[in-house]
Image 1 (tube, one colour):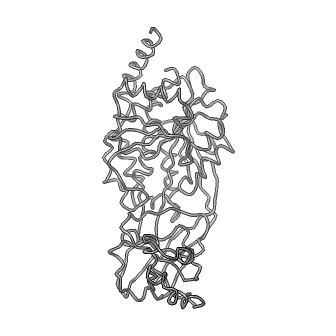
Image 2 (cartoon, helix red, strand yellow):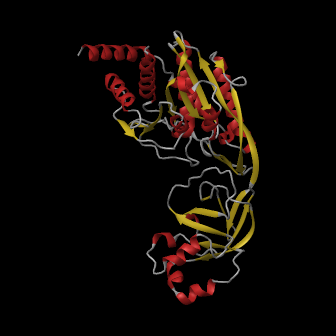
Image 3 (tube, one colour):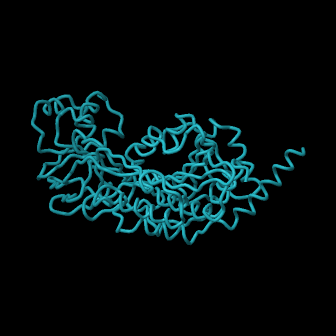
Length: 424
């Protein structure tokens, strides 16, 4: 009973201590900056990710964080497919617009020409005579429209499988649906182009399609951005806050993926926490890492775990923040099942502060930058907020769409949890 009372009193003190710490105006300013056209979607066209890294470095320096690595930078590199020039399609002479009408597969190769369009529906595929006529034909100048083969029951599913794997060697495939047009980066070229159209953006009677997609390849040099506040009493013990700053960048020279929720929101909270802890030095050393290359495969965080700038064995807690703009439905803690005692502390902090309506546990998952730290034995969580926000990897994940409705509460909860771990 006495232990529970002391713990509760300690948490109440933490609640008071962190309540005034967050600065939502500063966070909004950071998100707006990171989502601006000057950052090119924080991808690989015009080195948008490097522009973002420089902004974060300047913010770290302004808060007088100690630089780790090379003046806050930890250089690394990886191959990437990117699209700096044309991404243009016309359907029988009518323009279709990237991001709005269509999207292409990750790693889509260069395509330049005018192509026939052939719809392969279930009736054709199930007709043995008609399907037989397709075999042996040259379709190198034809795109197949194949969306119906995914949605209908077929008498000959093996034929559909052949078509959907491009076994008939078409120039490429076309899918039509009403799903959100989402995209991801790639390190390798795809074998053939796949175009995903909104249902209403691709008329049934299209006969010809002109495609101009200019794909480029490079080994891209980038960097993690890392700063530290030295602990007052236990400087050799660490709490680490992380967020990835990269996003999808540009699809051609005109279409940008701003990445407001994913993950300008997480970077803003990271910078806001750096501001808070710079004014309230903790007992442990606190490390802030903005990771590169998350969207393309957790590259930056993996690189750090293989080339750590602090002793991984001395990290008492790592909190990775991604998708941090909502919270009306609560927070999900990935790795809750891996670290149940810490998760119980998180729930206790939330209960005492009455911050968020729900703290949901989730198991181990390779879905953000916490993962390789967990694999290295670090007690690591990935926190994301849940709410009525559905833009993800699309062009409408913009600054103007964010509400930050529970930003203050989420900030306070996370800092309470971290401060409890540091015995503050």
